[in-house]
Length: 60
Image (cartoon, helix red, strand yellow):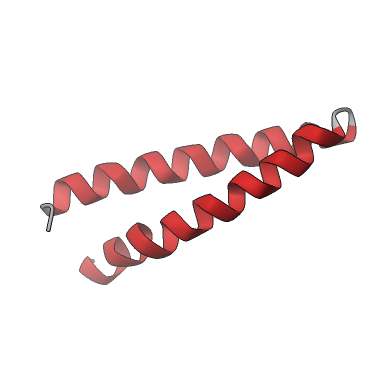
């Protein structure tokens, strides 16, 4: 298993991607396809959160 600093760095990147996708989704009123595709990508990010972010919260 990777050391805790590697996992924390990965978790930080996952959270940044999630934040950016949420910002993109907010522009969905003007670009419906952007909103749909952002939602789909957020589902994948949620799976990454379940895999990584939950491990980080358990280590704290």
